[in-house]
Length: 125
Image (cartoon, rainbow, N blue to C red; front, side, top):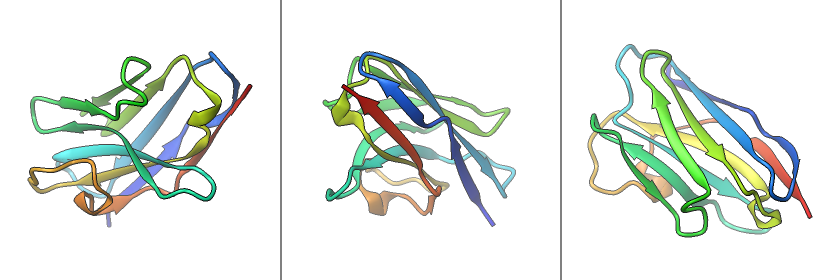
């Protein structure tokens, strides 16, 4: 049974930084793709970032490009999201997601088979 567990959320002032972690367990192989999504109150869950394939290609939503960095440590089966220059509009529950099979897309909820429970990120003005 594959499990994804996020950590690292919290309360931070605007302009501050947080690093989210997502630990994957339950399979010996590394996921083909890992993504981060977020959901603010009253809004749909939206794509934030993804890291895909053996080469570790990275993708970002325009709203976080230049401020967030996704990375992974295959030895630890962990994916990270470094979030800098945080803004109040980044406030949301952040979810990590993973899949083990190739797909050509990476930014839709349906592109992933496994999801974590979410971690709250709150950015105060």
